[in-house]
Length: 201
Image (cartoon, rainbow, N blue to C red; front, top):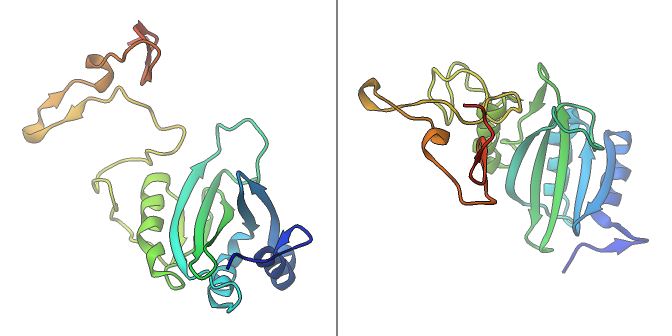
């Protein structure tokens, strides 16, 4: 049975707004999906409430993803540079809900791994690729996906795209991808569009 709707507002959104007040920063529908903007410090309480509520039962953690909006010039849902979007599902109601929190460099987000065990590795991936710190799920001095000596966070907008020489076994180097690859006409590819070289390399 789907989540009930009253006066055009879903029950889960009503319950969150009633329970957490101004810690729910807003909500909206986009592409037939519901998003709730949550104060970063309250994400654990909100997720626990959604999971434990008998009539909501958001008991399945699908994923969480990071987004870097530093180069985004359009309207935003939150003011911080980064957003983390949590995708939760109620198996009982076959309903999905997205929670969004904002975070800047130097700030942390409380981990959800103690609410949903499935949050542990996605949070570590985001930490490794964006540099977003999840308090309680840190692994200081070690990378999760990348080599321990990797410098920087490759999904941040300032990270260079392509053009790096690839180091192979025995310290031999291969050519950069854009030096040897040529897409078909009309295909966009790191530094080249169609058959025209636009990278300056």
